[in-house]
Each structure stands twice: as C-alpha cells, then as structure tokens.
Length: 441
Image (cartoon, rainbow, N blue to C red; front, side, top):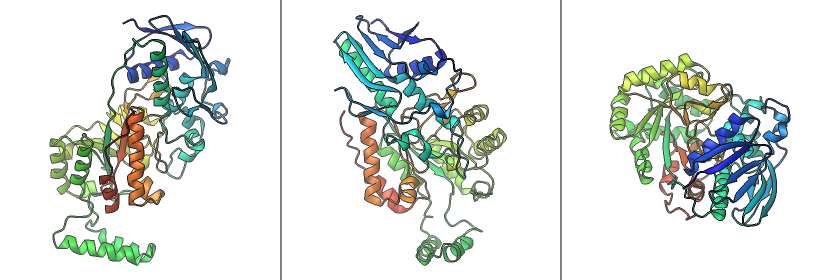
C-alpha cells in the first residue's frame, strides 16, 4: 500500500512534524511529508484529499513564538459531522464540506493536538499554586468543560474515519488500550515508630476529631495483636492490577525526612524484602521524586541512587510527589537524572486528560524544538482527587472509574490510575467493585 502524502504549510515545521509523528505512532500510518502554501492536506493513495485549516500556526503571522497567553483561545466550538459527536474544537471552526472525493474541514487538528500535548499554555500562564504547580482550574480544558475527554485521541479518531471514508483500503494499526495501576508509597507504615504518638495527639488537638482518634486507636491495637498495618495494601494493589491484565508500578518516596515527607525510606529495613519480592513478580519499582526535587537534578540522582542500592534493582520510572511539575524545565532534569518514563502529568484536583490523551508519548522540548528523550504516561485518575478533594463516596468512586474505562475503550486510549497504599479501605473496595465490561466502540 502506498503511503499517505501529508502536506504542511511552511512555518513552525518542527512542531508540525512532531504532530505528524504522534499521528503516525497512534495510527500506525506512514506519511510522506511535503510542504505547501496553505492549510494541511492528507492525500490518499487513491488520490482523494482531506483538508484541515492551518488556523493556529498560520495565524501567527511573523511571530516567532506561540508561547503567549494571548494566543490561548477565548472559547471552543463544537463539531458534529456524523463521524464524531460534539467534539470540542480548540483551533479553527466547525465548517465541513464533503463531495466524496474532497473533504474540507475548518478544524485545525495540528494546532489543537500540539496545544494539548506540548502543554505550552502551562509555560505561557505564569500562575502557580502553593506547591509550585500549574493550577488545573486555569487550564483551558478544565475552564471550558472538556478535561474529561481525550481530545487528542478524538481528533485522531476523526482523521481515521475520514481517511477510511475516502479510501477504505487504508489499514490502521490495531491498538488495545491498557489500564496502568500505579501506587505512590508516601508512607510504608501508618503506625511508624516515633510518629504514632504525635499522630494521635494531632487527631485530638489539631484536627479535633475524636472519631479519627478512636478509629486509629482500634487499628493500632489490632496491629499490636498481629494484624497487618493498615498501609500494607501492596498485595491488594497487585490484585487490582491483575484484574486489568497488567502489573502495578510502585513509586517509592526515598527523600530524607522533611516537609511533606516522614522519611520512612531511610529508617526502615522491612520494606526491602517486600519490594524486592514485588519486583521479582513483575511489578515496576519507580522513584517518587521528593517534594524539593521538582527542578533539582542532584536530589533526583541521589534519591534514585539510594532506591536502587537498597532494593538491588535499576529504576527508570518516576512520578513527582504532590504531582509537582514544570513542563518547561522538569523533563530536562529527569532525562539527565536517568529517568526514562514519567507518570506525573495529571492534576491533583481534576480527573481527566491534562495532555488530551491517556496514551504514552514523548513530550515536546521547547528549547530544542523536538521530542524529549523520555516517555510520558499521563495520569488520568488519582484516588485522593476522588475521595479527598471530590468528597466522593464508594459508589461514586466506582462509577467515576467505570466512566473512564468506557472512555478508554471508546477512543482507544490508555487509563493510568493512582491508588495510594495509605488510602482508606472504602477506596479499595470501590475500585474492586469496578466492572471490567467496557462499552464497545
């Protein structure tokens, strides 16, 4: 089969080729890339043609940068054409023309895909929260109500349907979406020596919560009688991952004691056998970058070294504590620190698609104008987002995860879930209730 010819307008060629590479990776198609003077063209092997507007890059004129808050759209349009339903249009318009040999759309799929994957809005918008994070509520996707939709995958699915409408001979790579179950081990034990008395005092004096005091006192007594520590949920997490046909990844907080870190990794020994055994059974062991390691290569290198030494393994996966991240600088630090796969890119207070997809991809390098040498696994659902920030009950948590499982199947995108080993029992019960009968496409 002949390759599809993709013609791209001049200007910001590297960014446009990055989008072509993403489309190629997600679909399995090969493209012959040519330049043209106006708008994007996909020319089928049979000669028929699809045209998309070059609204974003083409509208920059003589500007040599797109990292400008003023270039973030004021709103979205909704596109329907029979091949997609109520799809958000970030750049371009909702026009559509079809004469069976030539399809022309006002949508700018290149500008839209690049906007979501590169996260350039997070560089353009300088606001940060108390933990140095880009606030999810300021994101364009959250502000315009489509954070729960994988718009990158939606744009690519529309392209696939248009291609097959014009040329049914074109075949795409089959992709079976995966569910990645991950866990951040912020604390290994709930009742840690030297910390338990302080915790009980905090329940009464700081939190003024006698119920929590009584509940934890009961659990502490049970542990003294031989019951497992409440945070010993590692086997349970493995079982949940197995339900979805995958192995879990545990991210270990190896930073020394300090703000937002109880320092358990440097004080305990019993965790060594636990995580070595989990690794032998196929679980991934990654680094949970410390709270002050957001842009510190020395910190991440040191934490990674201690983790690998203690567990006698090589660790090349990671996720930031508190989901701290800076798309303009963190990837360079991670690459230099020996991290090859990052799992951070999600929002602490929103479930959904921060990057517009759940699929793994290589993030955009703004300084070198190419893809980074690291793989991003976007985080879609975090348990604390549901029960702590969202105040969801057990059945609501189950329904929320089932929603994303259906979205995963519908748009052939992956679903990465974060379950803390320290989460309440009802969270585990809710996830274990999830039905794995996903909606057919």
